[in-house]
Image 1 (tube, rainbow, N blue to C red):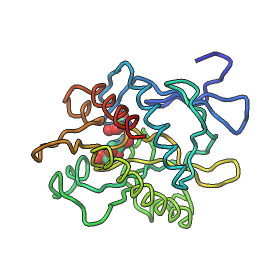
Image 2 (cartoon, protein in one colour):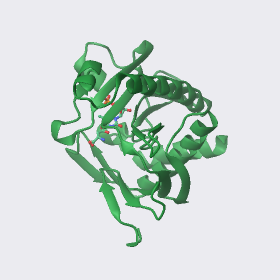
Image 3 (cartoon, rainbow, N blue to C red):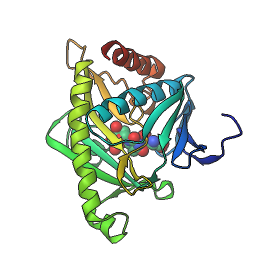
Image 4 (tube, helix red, strand yellow):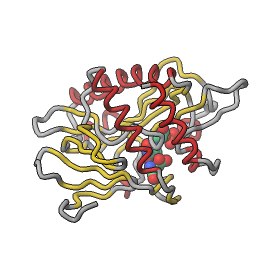
Length: 242
Ligand code: TMP
Ligand code: ASP
């Protein structure tokens, strides 16, 4: 990225730079992958580009479905221009099917279809290891008002409906996903971050039996290999569909 742009923030998978317009930022998607709060680290050439392109297409689809989000346009294949937001330090996870930490922390068996979507809140705080947090604790910490939390829950459920059918159309099961929200300069709530195989679990529906084939970051988390092939497959299916 050109030095003209000042680095505002560097996360595990993205860098955020300033833009000439004060209400915009430039987001560069990195090839780095981390898991388990960066205990595990690797680099996958081309991951940044794939996540940027996949996220851009999904954000466009969400805008068409009236979900406000920060995406403005692609700058190049691994960089997007987005609205500047003040990120709310919460990770909102929605689960349709039990997997991952839900199965490690409860007696629910992996692969169980949940009778209704489960929403889990996590505090976005690396030094505390992003702990699971309750609505009451969110209120206690004054992170956001309960009214705004309700807006976020409502948006997350709507996004789930839209994304579930979007992915079903391309033969993918949306198991779970993580969202982040923020406030724009007018104090409206916008969806931020990314929507990609880094923060969604996506299972291939093109299977004759019940075998789980993950086309997402579980390929790295669980040492399955083939991460770039999986992400490329998703990008290809989206492009063939749109
Ligand atoms: P979990 O089962 O590990 O709690 O993950 C649930 C979903 O949230 C899964 O799609 C991966 C995503 N996720 C992130 O995007 N970032 C994170 O830091 C974690 C822990 C999960
Ligand atoms: N993004 C998280 C991390 O590094 C974890 C994950 O996605 O599993 O650490």
